[in-house]
Image (cartoon, rainbow, N blue to C red; front, side, top):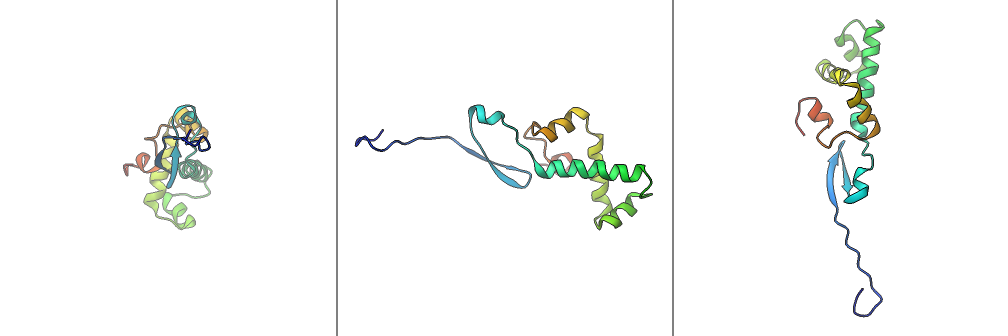
Length: 113
């Protein structure tokens, strides 16, 4: 409370972190345990399983055919497909927004953080 008795100043420590290509404000305490959905990572995992299903069902015979149909680079498709090899509990954590801060798409693809 200020000296005049009318102004109240509240200080909340915040941190800004990059998650999924976006900046997120992280607050201390209870709010830290809230889910942190990394939309970029969730989309990549979903895409990986979709592409795997397309290959398994014979819709596309090779990764090169799949990449051409999706109009993207075959090496990118190969790297994204590796996400299907994550343990089920890691996939569940990603979908629930409970993955560790170090679990990012660039990190999982070998590109660092």
